[in-house]
Amino acid sequence: MHFSSSLLFAATAVGIAQAQGATPSGFTPAAKTQLDVIFNSTSVDTPGKLLSKAATAAEPQLALPKSAVSSSDTYVFVMLDLDVPGQGNNATRRVLLHAMNTGFKATQQTVSGGAVLLASSEKGPASYIGPGPPATDTIPHRYTQLLFKQPSSLKVSASDFANTKARIGFDINSFAKTNGLGEPIAGNFFMVDGRASAAGGAATGTRGAGGARQTGTGGSGNSSTPGR
Image (cartoon, rainbow, N blue to C red; front, side, top):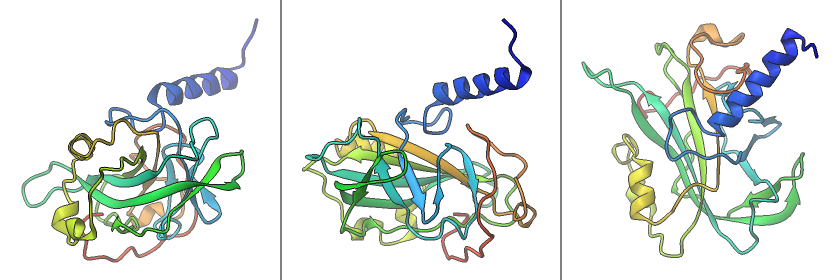
């Protein structure tokens, strides 16, 4: 049987995406189930999709596949930037906590594809910070989203993340272990390129799964938070 090169390429791409799961390759804790992350009319339908600062400025809506959601469970949402530049002579990149929102529950609404929309009346303990990678950086940043089942024993407050220092260098594995979160129920990730040259098209130096493409328009992303 003959297969065209395009079909073989597509099959290979799908295989790679399935092997890597919904979170970036090598990242822990990994998630295989894809979390629906929706910014207005823009959806992160492919993990690793390249989006603009403007498109991701406001907190996204979340949805879970029907097979993964439970009406009796409460969930906590976490979003991380994995690629914050180091400071001074330290070139090691750091993690920045962009959001930690608790109290998510399944609603009666579904989104395109049948996933169940989640909702929460809570705005923290770490309110959402929109992506703003610096224009001087050489790579797009990977913004990783994780959804955990929220234990009743979870004790976090806004005061825990009142300043940037508490968010920079955030260790999600240590936090999950300390607070009994277990493994993530689902995850996803998208990328944002801060370079001006990336505003009109796909970025160079793209990393991660999925065919990254530019969506939306450029934004300033001004913030006192370093290299976010």
